[in-house]
Length: 450
Image (cartoon, rainbow, N blue to C red; front, side):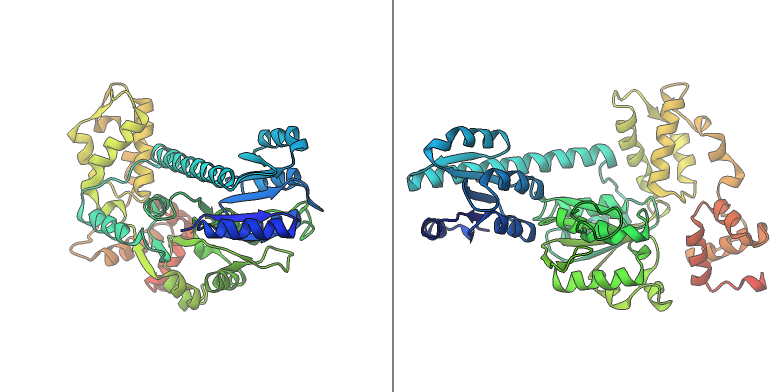
């Protein structure tokens, strides 16, 4: 891809000459005549480098530099100045400009300055990417596993990561859907650009549109200044819309338009901004079922579900428990002092793991902190973990039922146990109440008949 340069100069002759020479060198050049138009272009498009004159009507080069760095923090800036303004240019470098050129300058000086700026930008992107990957490994742990279900999922991840396809990641809470999304991003051609994750369920409904698309000053009470949304922040990279099933129908319609037209409109603005973002979505509910209940738009569902990726629950990859424990011990006992015995692993493999990998990770952290020795055993398991009420027993006459039949029976038994109190039944099953309600509908359980 050619380097994208934004050229801002109020001298039409010099602007045309520079644009011609830069294009001849293979650069993709957009030329504007003042700082205000340059700032608008930066908000609407992605550039690698800003080449700007110091003296322009409206915004000066210094003012443009400051605002450009706010809009595009990773943008490299080269200023063009007259000899008498060198002291001001030095000040500009302190404010974030990569370099400055004094008039008149040779073509080679310009090309060398641009080459250095681009190399510096690429090096910064590479360092940022490596830091991001290291931070992800520290925060989320590495994706590890040897089970067949895990290997099948990773094989699919490796196939779809280098593409531009939209991916719908489904799976229960705690299975690692966000980590899968990050893995897709960092194995893609967008890995040097931002990865932005937003939890649609964690933001008040009245603010979610502003978070996604941004807003302009005065758009609503409290909007005291312009704000860039997550789509703009993710420009060139990847955005993950987690818990996407929580979006309102109205916002789903706007999101559908974003996918179709690749543009957004900030709240309170009539301005349309083009975006270049790969979209990933994640959910722990059955969106297909939601479309039947008109809780989710069918057209949006099919737009998102280009590549469906199911993250298996921990109970379907019990053979991965030992290797997951090993990774968690690296995280919580970096000196490698703590080990586990086979008795503990056997106990953990027999657990139901409604909280999946997150539950296992929290348990290991708790046991490492509260341990009485450096070898963890089944005796070190917390009392609430070993409690009969902690998990539903699979021995309650489930026989040779299928998984879905067993799950339906568990729900019915739990509802009966607590006299149809859904909140208590959900706590007993260790699942959110809305998931219990969804599964009651899914299995067509008639509460009046229980």
